[in-house]
Figure 1 (cartoon, rainbow, N blue to C red):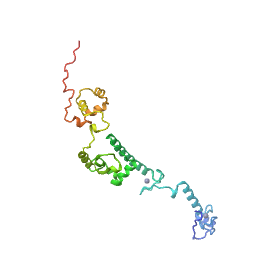
Figure 2: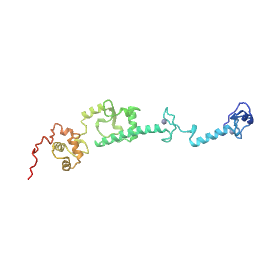
Figure 3: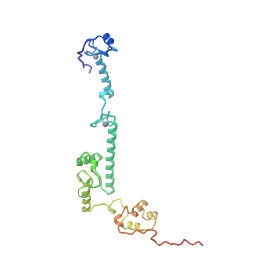
Figure 4: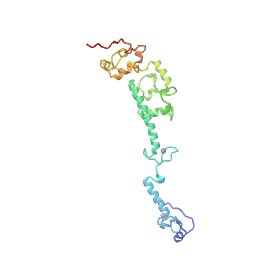
Length: 258
Ligand SMILES: [Zn+2]
Ligand SMILES: [Zn+2]
């Protein structure tokens, strides 16, 4: 960089004249020690270009000025500070949030598949690129389990969630497929099930307390509550009439004291 020169073609002024006229810079016809044909700073008589080159070299060493890394997001003109100095703080946190949302969605699918005994053989990165290929850049908004949204469906509802075995279809079509393939997972089809339909019906109709039932069947009270409130085992308890304590004949008189 030191051999850069500026061929100054302005008028020749002595330093004394420049001082007298109050000029910041002047050129008296002398080249600087490095051979620059450049103006000099009036205050110190030093080469202005040498000074600029020194500042440039300093900035280069310290990532400052025009050597400052800038955010790579189109339209963003903030200094890059995060992610190997390619993103500014706000773009980094925005992307970070997006990634977290996607990661949560990935984990949700992973655990919901696991609870149905189906392995999900995607890494997070593979999973994201699969969605991007299928639905484009705004894939996250297009996927979901409501009408008009897309989901990852296994071919014939068989096997694992793996790149060769899944297609991207509308959620509503997937539900129709699951119904026609009779692969909707419920009751004893779920691998982690400890109850069965008969026990579920007994629990639903029983007048015992949650704790008593929990001990009787060796499950926790939350499981009992889920059956009784028909959150779980809805198919097994469909059509059954649950009696309340009031409907069961209770002694209406207070116990007699002896
Ligand atoms: Zn110079
Ligand atoms: Zn930015």
